[in-house]
Every structure is written in C-alpha cells, then in structure tokens.
Image (cartoon, rainbow, N blue to C red; front, side, top):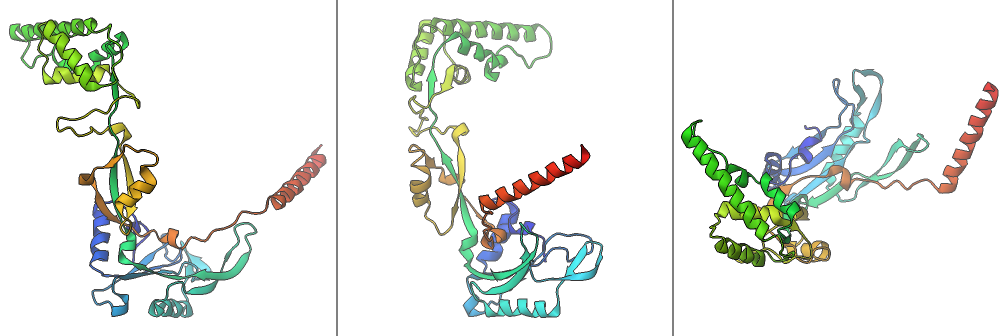
Length: 341
C-alpha cells in the first residue's frame, strides 16, 4: 500500500523509474487499486494498493489492471482525526469482484458532488481499465539542433574577451608571491595585450556567417602578426566574438558533424509503442527541420498516470446561465448597499 508518489515520481533512468520498470517488465504488476482519501487517522492523502505476483493467471500475462475505487466509501458518523471515510464490507466485496472480472471499461453507478451546485449526483463511471505492460513505458529522447553563429571583431564584442576565463587566466600565476610570480603575471598581461591588438586589426572586418571562414581570417592575421594562438586562446576569441544567429551557417566539429547548440537542446517523451522516427517526423521536424536525436542520451522510463486514465471531462456551464447568476448577485449587492446607505 502506497501513496500516489510511487506511481510517477522520478524521471526516466532514476531509481524510482527503474524500480517501476523492473516490476512491470518482469510482469509482476497485476493490478493497482485507487482507494478514497481520508481513510487513515493521521493523514488525508489518497492511497493505492499494488497487487504484485510472480504467478499471474495466463489471461493476465502482460497486462495490468487499474481499478478506480476512489468513490467506494461511506462517511463515518464521527471522524477520528483525519479519518472520515471507511470501506463497507459490501464495497470491499465489489472491489474484489471488479478485480476478479478483469474487464476493460467496467462501470458502476457512483455518487459524487457536482462541482457547480455542490449537490450529490449519481452517474455511471468507469472503474476498471486494462493496459498492456508497455503502455506505461516511454523513451525520453534528447533533441539537438545545430549551433549557428556569426562572428565579427566589433568593439562591443572584443570587450567580452575580458570576461573569458581562459583570457583572464593568462595574467595569473600559481606560484607564491615573488619574482617568479610577478614575471609570469607580467608575461600574461603582455600576451593579453597582444590578443587585444590582434583583434583590433580585425575590427574592420564585416560580420561573417561561417565559423570556418572567420577562423581562417583570424589565423591569417595571427600569422601576419607573428602570433601563434593556443587552442584555449582560439576558443576564448571565438566565444567572445561569436553570437547566435539562426541565419548563419552551421558550425561543425572536427569529425564533420553538426555541433549541437546547448541553448536549443530539448527533451521529448515518446511512448514505447510509438516509433521514434515517426514521432520526430510528425511532432518535431515540421517545427525544426534541422533537428536530430542524440541516441546516446535516450533513456527508458515507466510511470503510471492513474488520474489521466480515469479523468472525466466536466463541461463548463452555459454562458447565459453564468450571466444570469452574475446579474442576480449584482442585484443582491445593490440591495445590501441600499440597506447600508
């Protein structure tokens, strides 16, 4: 017997999800019965009975039954702490029959409260649903989009070089204060000024929509200035002078593959019974044609959205009825104000 958290707590790959996955994929979960709230003395939360077995009957193999017993209760004459509801023997017997029937869509005439009038009402409600094991499984896929940057040695971008850690590190020393420390710091500051001067020489260049072309210009200017850029310095310069631009060319890595943009990274949840490529074609690519899936990050998760499966739509009240109620309240307020004044 659990509260509602074990049904859904934890995303794909988490400990909670892996426990659910093991139980369901091992075909140990036979049924879950949702009980009404306010059944216990110290808490009013709803509770769920998980029926687990490694000896399922053949017709239950690969299946899970969800039973909605939240309306199966009788009010106590006197509450005991938070305990205001209880199950009668007849209701316990009925829930047992529902479990034994193992019927998808079985209904009962149940009484609940109308959300508008707050009056009791009786209507048929589905109390049993049958699902395949993999109906509760899903894949969490990572959708990547390519990094697109433009580059320019504009003054406002050159200033950003000062905030790059690799650039700041040039004028720092790990040595203790002393002559060696001061010498390394002085050399670093000189190197920083060399980089500033290098970028000032590129200041007349126009905006470049291709990283490789801009990098080639940077290297030519560096060679002309007899400066050899390290990998860290080159990365700092590109980070400072680059700006995201959806119209710019795609940036590629050393293997010739599109480089993903972390700011555009997204995750999607795809049911196990749905093909990932079909999902991409229908739900993602129409909005982002350049997107792709990083399959190395795909994780499988399991959750049991009990409320979603037994949700009953409540249609809104007609507008003319709401309008009449508002007019009646308005007249009542006017009458009360007239008594005061």
